[in-house]
Image (cartoon, rainbow, N blue to C red; front, side, top):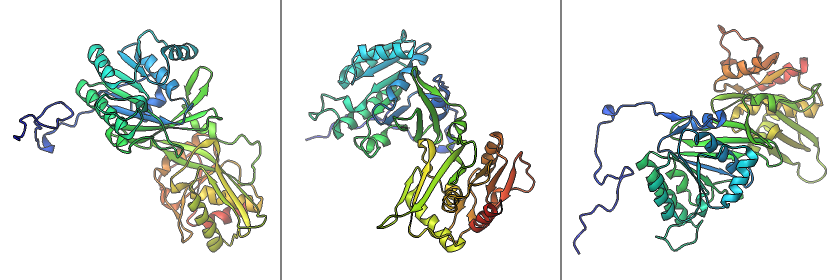
Length: 417
């Protein structure tokens, strides 16, 4: 057989012949962005929607994915042609939600369809600026015989929609199901195909919802958006630190205030610890919102370098509000919360803290320490415990900054108060 003259593969732009240029000759221009009208959603995206960007939004059932996208598309439809494709609900169900949320829906083009070829034909006809697919796991293509939601169907449909987005300059938002482990269902390549991966987090029994950017080719990863679920939909929370701070009238043993960084914003969170006598068996070590092995390490450091032994004690550590803190800068707050509960001694009122604890008992510096200090000062805290390396002698703050070179120094400071 003679090889076909037609190229087997094509570029995303649709050209069969790729051009080669020197990187130095490519103009690095700022990408124009379209604000969605939702400040927190724009923050996570990096400033707004980018033409041709493909966004994957995942989250647990009932967390608020469809609610948020309906609110966003309602605002965008005032100036852009929006096509909302629903594969899980009927048009009447979507209309009922729009009415309940008071979403301006006159400009939203709605279609209930799961066949990829039909969707692509409608895109060709309407030429929308924004396309929403709810959800990618419901679509199927005639080119494959497998059922919707299978690995091959999800991969092929996502790739076809990505090609359409790049060739037409159309922003595409894909809703993705998640597994019981909390990861996006389907092939891992799905997260590699898209430009941005967002995860909806939060407890369905709580009013707080978080959107975290895991991957973003057009902005910063690990950016965080905070929302509150109300009867009329998701409301933006511009000052989340005020929500997560404790409402205790007096200091409570086992409570510490952590100054952390989520994406580009500083946050103050409440870390709680409970140390109690173990009843038979091996003592329990339970951590919610922080890394469990790291708590075990902190207990060893407290024992070795501070003489604080928790042998035979159950230890529970929790970050209030359903937040999860992955950075090691939470070590100092967790360690002092454990110490406070073990000694039944409240930490001084109006005190925040930050710092990573090393195995040698030293307090290591954290990133963007000055922003954390300013956030604590803005919220009315009197002092903050900080690593020595994060304190610049020439800088002035509206808060007392207490340097703590070692964990034992922090414990000694608490004992003196």
